[in-house]
Length: 72
Image (cartoon, rainbow, N blue to C red):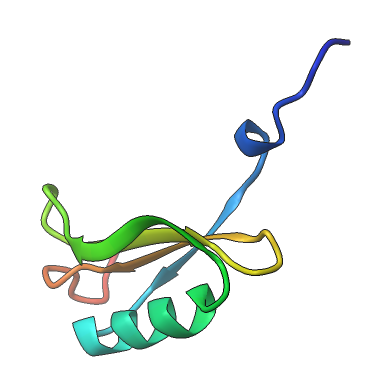
């Protein structure tokens, strides 16, 4: 059925941290030996966010939203 671009056919795992410190710890630990796609930092939409592909090829997003109050 045609060619498939593996980089466009993947899902990402998203983790929501409870603090910037936790987000930094998760990002640093899980991204070790992998490839950073977006360094973790304050984002234009107000959260603390970063993306990477770990050493096994799994894609991750780590997020901390200081405005989130634990309710949907």
